[in-house]
Image (cartoon, rainbow over all chains, first blue to last red; front, side, top):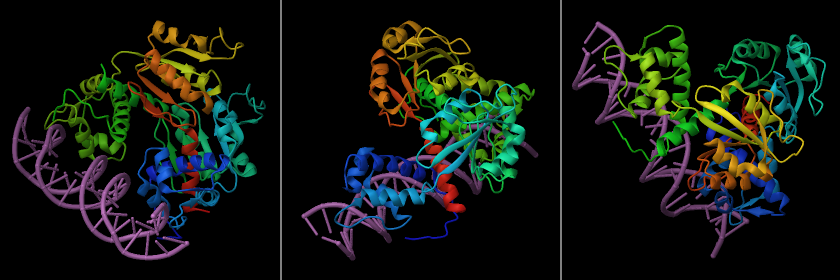
Length: 215
Length: 215
DNA sequence: TGCTGTGAAACCGTTCACAGCT
DNA sequence: AGCTGTGAACGGTTTCACAGCA
């Protein structure tokens, strides 16, 4: 099956598995493995092999019958598919603990991503740099900065109050997608993809499961 | 439907909606609203009202026919259900950027949670405190500290390499649940609930969706 | 033979629609 | 009359099972 102009958003679960798969492929590649079957890959993270094949089949035919998948080749296809071929520029609103943590994170500055700037309203922080050298700009320069640095994905690491207005400013400034860590649900505005990630929800989930199983 | 001794883990989606619901109830309560119907609640976050009712019905009968749900009462039920009646003690492995961000976070130190300690192997950090006063202990004291502070939930904010061994140590020390931010999948060990949260997956998801919709 | 790609079947979560309580 | 609680229908995702290609 092929569907060059896909309008449907990729299901969350599929995207998650493909991220897992990409990570796995990186591991296999650096271990010198050239070929892997869907069975081998599935075993790695306790999934069904048909699921791997179905996930990939949605986007093209990447395997070789009787052989499996060529690691290097599949990895390249996947990266292209996920838009990780070129580096996407990130801008983080909020130079607090979390914002700085993300700005300095190896994971946000590799494999297709790079943090170009932090934004804050605190005059004492503005002008400084994060530990790894990400500049902290005044949040009032958000609009110009997005254009100047070509920021494609915005990250909200601010308190709840500031989130919605900032999301709107980011959208208006031309940011295409937003990862929101503030504890409010930012709605997807027209032209702006939004992913809300509330870290306390993960804790509550664990607490819930603890309450269900043990006391 | 009632099921006093539930063994099934709560579905991710349900848990997520109940967290959202709890947040919503807090808002309603402080706005002085006493009663809310599933229709009103559902409208708040664009869900189906039957979903709200079904989610709640799994755990008991909390509503009043013809009236709706009493906000204060439902909130209390939910908190009890989710194990948030009493404060759960957290311990964070890794006093780097992310670990400190979480330790200082208001959200990890309210509404049923409290960070009791950070753990690190860097001698220069050990003995110090986070900005909000969370002590940084030597990771070699993990086992005693878990017992002493009665840590119930462990959080891994360490690089990929350290994650699995630390998870095993936490499990052995008696921690009941683990929230893992390291970019490796920590398997659920016997007696240890594990929630893996890879922040780069959220970014990749956005990049993926961007790649699908725009270039 | 061995593995992919894929229809068909099974499963699960969501939505509908209404009986039943207040 | 109004809203909950829930069986039944629906839709989407996962798994099975196999045809077809290397």
